[in-house]
Image (tube, rainbow, N blue to C red):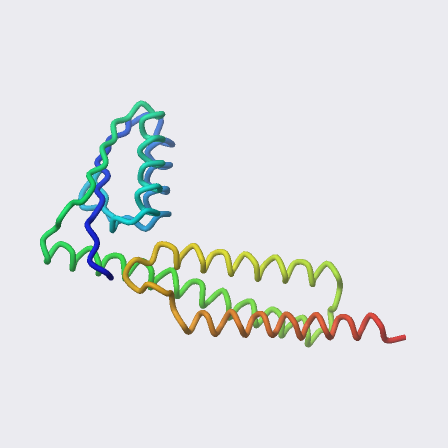
Length: 179
């Protein structure tokens, strides 16, 4: 991770209704922030993370909460190391889940090919599944502030998925054109 100054979001949200607190928690996790303690989260300071935390802070204010963004924060080396470790662990878990879903996608194509089920509906479903998997991977990569660039093994797995879908599509077209 490049040495960025850090952004801190310090906030409080009314306890009720709990959906507001849950919304904020989900948004903080979605952008890849790490909690230092309740109501205090941190991200490396970049243009993108500043926009993301500002949007979350605005929602907190709409929820009648309080939010403060601290820019250019400097953290102690030990704390930075702990934050990096937490970020790495969170992204590793997400990369593992994406990789498992890519394997499941490939297995699904194998089953459909073995059953020779080349329907247009199945093809559309597979295309949508692959697009969803690719979007998910991009979302994980976008919040990976430690391993900038993502996971090469998942890049390879998604290429295999694309190739398998392409072959499935070709087989479906041949099947369709066979009298």
